[in-house]
Structure formats: structure tokens, C-alpha cells
Amino acid sequence: MARIPYADPAHPDHVEAAAHIVASRKKLGHLHRMLLHAPPIAQGWIDMFDAVRWKSDLSGKIRELMMCRVAAINDAQYEWDAHAPIALKEGATQAQLDALRDWEGSDAFDATERAALAYCDAMTKHVHVPDDVAAAVRALFPPRQLVELTVTIAGYNCVSRVLEALAINGADPL
Image (cartoon, rainbow, N blue to C red; front, top):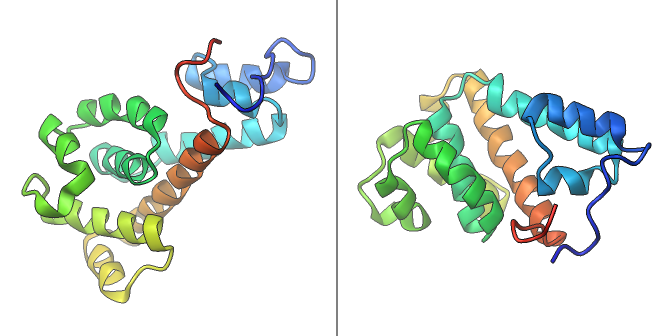
């Protein structure tokens, strides 16, 4: 059960932010209902994550693999459940998803995916990225995509931390 009740989207203080979310996502999910407690944050959240997900030059497959890897590292099941199906639609394989928790021991990933996963691991587990890991992604991704990769990883670490800190999960009623 979530640590605080979900916000009422019909509350006068939440109506505008709820409409902003629905205009983008077509529905109000658990995370969005929680974010409505802080309407300016809810609207800014949607704008940022819309840019990460829909206005990026980064491949959808890399983007979703990073989101799933962050979820796996942070044990954020709700985040995993949301993004694993999208990863498959974006070209990831079930074998890749199955191997993602122990990707280093798997041959399911190509060199670009492995470099991105190492970068994701460094950012998520240690914050500071070793020079050799940074050099590997810099050699494979142009500057715009490297920024997008970095923000995707950082952003979805934020998502998992909010989900886990507030105990947001799919079992809670809407």
C-alpha cells in the first residue's frame, strides 16, 4: 500500500495538472496520481519524461533497456513491469530482458548495448562514472545521444526512487 493516499484528480488544486497528464499519457497511473499532490512537479515531470521518451534521438531499444536495467538494479518492480513490454516493442528480445539482471555474463547484448549497460551500472550503483566506461560510450554515441542516454538513466533512477520511497505499486486501487 502506498505510504500516503493517492491525490484526487478532481480536486480543484489538481484538475489542471491531471488534464496535462491525461493529454500526454491518456490516463492517470499510480505514479501520476501521487505526483498530483504537487501539481507543478507533476506537470514538469510529464514534460521532462515526454522529452526523454518521445523527443530523443536515442534508439527506443537502448532507452527501454536502460529503464529496465535501472529498475532491475533498484529492485523497482512497478517500473520493470511498465517498461519491459515497451522494451519488447522497441526491439529488445525476451532473452535480453531475461539476461538483464546479469548482463555481463550474457552474450545477448551487442557492443553498443554493453557499453550503455556498463554506463548505466556506473551511474546507478556508484554515481561517478569511471573514465574508461565514459570513453566507451563517448566513442559510440554522438554528443546529443550521450546526453540523452545520461538523462534517461538519471531520470529513471529518479522514477524508481520516487516509486520505492512512496511504496507506489500496481496493487493499489485507483
